[in-house]
Length: 99
Image (cartoon, rainbow, N blue to C red):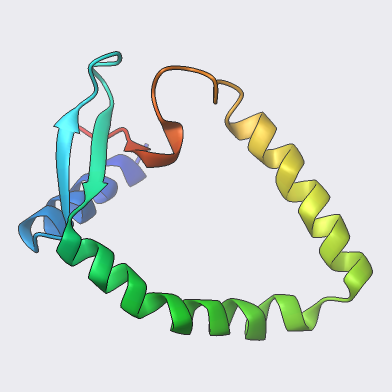
């Protein structure tokens, strides 16, 4: 898989910029817990309005109400398919597996 080294480089850069910290997962030694630092939270908060505007402009506004409902259903199905172990002790929403 080619994306793992790239993800590792991105995580390393975010850590070097003091935007995140990372630690080893206690229940899965292969996983890395990535946590936003206060500086990272500030950067995320600053980016949120622009991100929200772009998502609305390029996605939400382009779809009808019926298509948005279909997208919600598709996203729910994909979430269950991609994260069947959401009940596991590892917080999958905040974990990046990297080497």
